[in-house]
Amino acid sequence: MAACISLILSGCGGAPEVTLPADRTESAGLCYGATMTLTQEKVGKGSVPLDAASHALHFALLAGTDGDLGDPAKVVAKIESIGTQDKGLQDKLVADKNAASYTAPCAKAFPETQAGTFKGLPTDTRDTRTQCYVLSTVLLQIFAQSEIAPDPRAATWVKLNGQLEQQLNNEVYPAEDDDHVGEIAMRALAKAVRLGPPVDVMTACGERYLKS
Image (tube, rainbow, N blue to C red; front, side, top):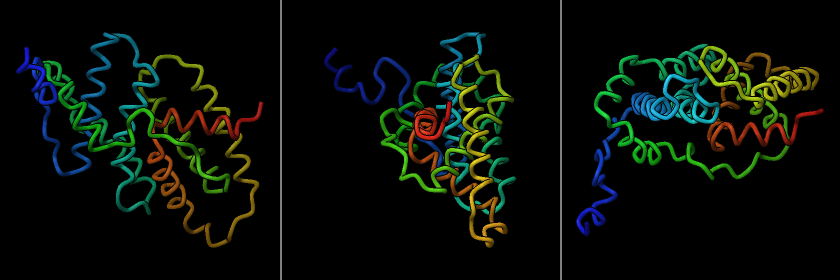
C-alpha cells in the first residue's frame, strides 16, 4: 500500500503516463482521441455530451491555430484533420485500455484545456466581438457534422452567432482590413481558444453580447 501511494503519480494501479510526441499536431490528435475514448466509455453508444465534445475539440483548436494563420481554409482543414487523422486510434486505445494514461500529459501540454483556466473576456472591442463570433462559427460548423447530444446551449450559440454577425457587418472598420479578413478571423480564433475551455468562453460571450 505504501509503495502504491508513493508511486500514485506514475500510475500505480493503472496505466503509466505516456510521453506525447514533440509535434503539437500529433499530440493534439492523441489527446483528442484519448478524450473521446474516455467519453465513449462513459456514454456507451449514446451521443457525446456538448461539454465532452468541446473539451476534446479544444486540443485540435489549439494545435490547429499554431503557426501561419493567413489561409482560413487551411487552418480549418488542419483543425478537422487533427480529430480524424487516425480513425483507428480510438479503437486501439479501447483495446489497450490506456486512454486514461494520456490525461495528465495532455493537461500539461495543453493547459488551456483545463477547468478554471478561463478568467474572463478581454475588454469589449471589435476584436473581442470577432473572437466570440469566429469561435461560435467554428464550434457550430464542426458540431453540426458530429453526433453531439442535444443541448440548449447550442441554440443559444446559433442566436448569438447571428447577432454578432449582424453587428460586425454594420461596424465601420479600416478599408485595408478587406484584404486580410480571413487572417483577422483566424487570429481572433487563436486568441479565443487560448482564453480557456470553449464552453466557458462561449458562456461569457453570451452573457456579454446576447440580446433577448
